[in-house]
Amino acid sequence: MLVFIDESGDTGLKIAEGSSRYFVIVLVSFEENDEAIACDQRIELLKRELKLPQGSEFKFNKLRKDQRIKFFEAVLPYSFFYFGIVINKDPDKLRGDGFKVKESFYKYACSLAFENAKPYLSEATIVIDGSGSREFKRQLRTYLRKKVSGDIIKKVKIQSSHSNNLIQLADMVAGAVHRNFTHKGDKDIYRKMIGAKEMYTQVWPK
Image (cartoon, rainbow, N blue to C red):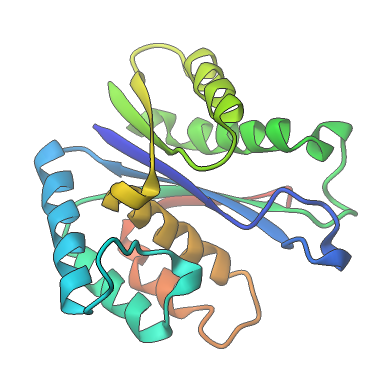
């Protein structure tokens, strides 16, 4: 089993100064490696079909509406599912000094996502986007090993989204979920497209 993690939004709490209202983490899971390879190859082919520059990667916030739709249409035939956690940073709801620290905020959000996914994970190889602080990613990897016990996690890898199409898939799914919580005109389109892939998305706190 392969699990790819990515996020959308930021951990900042100063919403009035430009921080996102929501912070989203998704876990995209493939039970079969062959299915993951096939989906990876389809995403690579789509880059050529869309005539994207060589070395391009799919990032939800950098694509046009039509490109996002084509992406989700391309990956729908493949067998994967996802879990999401949506942190509502409304200051009237999100309390606690720990949320003021980026690392602890992110790790707590990941723990919520994994708690929901645990019954469905077995001997999973977890792949995390390697952008950002190397020390933070190291801490997150250690945290995941300690937080999720038993035979759920087999290995944790850190890879660059630039060279991993399935981390890009996780980025696209996270972006679709995040967009659904905005007031933008296309907010409902993408999450509906991948609705059959959604196992559970939790909004926290209520």
